[in-house]
Structure formats: structure tokens, C-alpha cells
Length: 374
Ligand SMILES: *Cc1c(COP(=O)(O)O)cnc(C)c1O
Image (tube, rainbow, N blue to C red; front, side, top):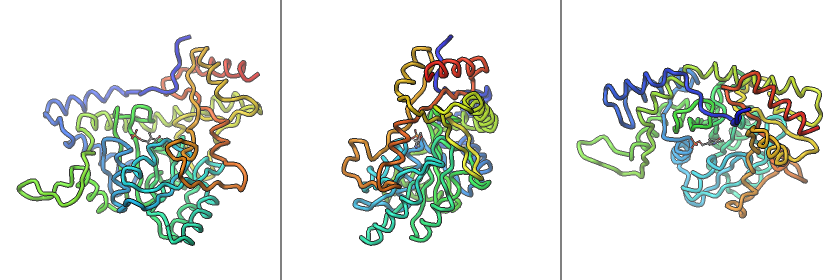
């Protein structure tokens, strides 16, 4: 058996056509027709009024926080169970993160923990400037509950949908429900531009402001005129060409990802050792990575054993409040004792989920997994 990777980029074949167009027209720049087309197609796909293609998902979060006027000394609430890119941009701006636990139905931000944190913050007169929620592994958070709390305190919500392009909540595409949404087109995501991201909002004016900030905040004048701090965060026109072709096959990729997930789930349906990340009511999960919780066996051990069989797997995100970088940060867990996010990290594993996986390979992975957990 050959090495089976966790997931690798999957090109459609059409990418070269759009890259060639960029070369033919010499649009080798962080703007151009491919960028315009990619943004327009993303707007159509997601239903967002405004879309800005960026050099990364992290850059998109940095822009969103800048538009929300996050400043040194402000606080930001963020899901603890995430990849560090969700919160790094808050540190660039000198803000203080407060981390919020997950709930166990969706693994997303716990509305119970969020309510506690907001009550506390209100009592101290230190409400956050933003709440960053993360739709992990393709799964939507409990949006009605979260938005109700955010609206009650009038706090903007940034949806980090880096892993959840194409997933929905009550029919709406993730990323389009809060004040801002962000996507990532990094090499490990469901579709990729090799590196890239997007900032979306239903407030098209805000996206126009972001477009200006992402181009060094250069003002409209016959000379180089600046009155604000800007960034160099636009997506390259060459890479946007990859994005156009990738977006054409996104729904196909999601269908395949869901097939892979269903194959794992069907195989281990009656096995008490494995439980799968559920698809919460009225949500649709793109199944970017098939993730499981293991009962009675350490995921690290399973990962090691799978590696010996040529199968790559990966642990879930290590919660931010347990990272040395954030040892001084406040943390609100859902329950008085224990922490759901820590439990998820201690029990969870991502299984191979590449859309090039063959039925034989999936059977082989299941067979090896069954042996290891037996
Ligand atoms: C990948 C990822 C990001 C960052 O995206 P980049 O494009 O790599 O900057 C942010 N948040 C989450 C949850 C991610 O998985």
C-alpha cells in the first residue's frame, strides 16, 4: 500500500486555462480579471453582497478586526478550539483574547459559556469589540443562539469559515450570517489557490473599505497619498485563476468528502470506540475532514499505529487556552468542572479525507483502524 495522506490539493485540470489567461494578458499582479471573476463567483456561490479576495485567511481576519476598529487594550472573544490563525490577528492589533469553550453537539462555541463570559464582561464594563466564532471541520456552530447573544450586547461576530466553505446553517452559507465571514484557500483546505483567502460581508461598503486597506490604504489622488495604516493583502491574479477553476468543482468535492465520511461512519456504525462529529439539525457539513472521537484508546496511539500502515491521520486542534502563548488569557468553560474543548482534543482524530481516495483505500483504512482499536 502506498502512503495515504490526510488530504492533499485536488486540481480539476481547468486551473491551467485561467493561469494561462493571466500570462497571456500579462496580469501578473495582485489585481486583474481573474481576481474580479473569482470574487464575483464567490459572491454568487455564498450569497454575500461583498467579497474581497485576500492573500490568506489570516489576512482576511486581520482586515475584519481592523474594520471593527480593534485597538490596543480591547478584548476579543474567540473559540478556544481552533487553529491559531483565528486569533493571531487580534494579537497584531495589541488586543487581549478571552477564550470560550465548545459545546459537544457541533464542537463550536458554546452559547452557555459565551453567555457567562458576556455577563462577566458587561459587569466589568469591558465588553469585547468582536466575537470570533469558528465553524470547525465543516460544521456550523449554533448560530441562532450565538447571534441572539451577540445582538443582545450589540457585539459584531466574525465567522471563521476557513474550514467550512459550502457548509450551511438553515440554508444559509456559513460566513454570511455574522458581520464578517472569512474563508481560506490554503493548500490544506477544501479548495485551494495554493495560498489565499477571502473576506465577505453583506455590507458591501465595508468590503470596499477593506479593499482600500488591503492595498496599502492608498487614497484616490494623482500622487501616493495615505492617511491610514494599510496592508498588502490582495490575492495575486495568477492564484485567483486557480481559485476560479477550484470553485467550479467545489460542490463535487463536497459530495466526495461526504461520501468518504459516510463510508467511515457506516463501517463503524455499531462500534462503541468511535463516534463521529454529528451533523447538527438544519446544518449541512462539507466534511472537509472526517473527524472521530475515540473511547478507551489514546488518539496519539492510533495515529502512530496508522502511520506504521502508511496512513496519515492527525490530532484535533489543541485548544488555545492550553497554549503557552496564551497562558495568561481568561477562559470560560461550559461546565463548572472540566472543559469540552480539552475533552475533544484528548479524544479526537482526523482520518484521511482527500477527495482522491479510492474505495479500496477507504476499505484498507477501515480495516487497519478496526485492527488497531480491537
Ligand atoms: C486555515 C485556517 C485559517 C487560516 O487560513 P490561512 O489562509 O492559512 O491564513 C484560519 N482559521 C482556521 C480555523 C483555519 O483552519
